[in-house]
Length: 219
Image (tube, rainbow, N blue to C red; front, side, top):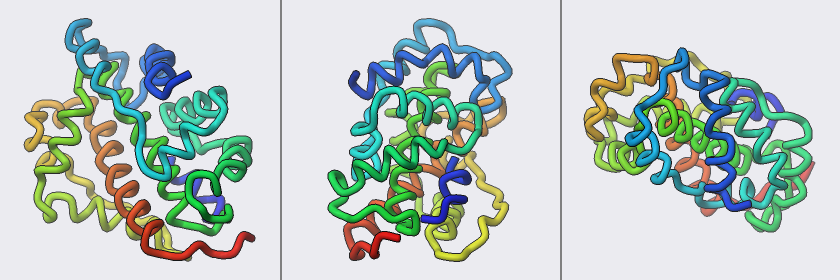
C-alpha cells in the first residue's frame, strides 16, 4: 500500500495493552479531556480487551514489543506509524499472510492498520470510559447493514488504489444504541467509538480481500 495509507490509518497482546493503559489517559486518546471511568467499571472493561485477529492481528502480535507499543502510542496520539513500524511489518508479512510484502498491497496494509487502530480505540474506550469490547462488538454484529454502510464505504475507499479519503459523517448513534451505549455518543467518547467502528469495518473488508485476492508482486 502507498505510504500515505499507513499515515491515514492512523509479552502477550493483552499484557501489552494493559501495560500502556495509563498512557491512553496521558495522551487523551479519543478526545477524552482527562475523563476516566470509575475503577470498578474500568477494570471490568479492561478485562474484555481482546487480541486482534486475522492476518492483521497475526502481524501485529509478531512484531517486537517495542514496535507494537510505539504503534499503539502513535494511534492513541493520532499520529502516523513510524518507518520502523513499516520495516518491522515487512519482515513478518509473509509469515502471517503467505504473501510477499508490498507497500502497494492495500488489503494487507488495511488489515494491519485496522488491527492496530482498532486495538487502540478499544483501549481508550475501556480505560477512560469503562466501555468493554464485548459491548462494542455486540453493537457492531447486531447493527443493520444500513447502520454500518458509511463505515464500510469509508473502508472501501481506503482500499481503492488511487482514491482520496473523503470526509464523511460517520454517525455512531445507531451502532451505539445496539450496545446500550447511547449516552456515550453525547460526550467525549464519541471520537473513540467512531474510530473503533471505522477500523472494525476496515479490518473486515481487508481480511475478506486477503482471502479472495492473489498477492501482488513486491515493489
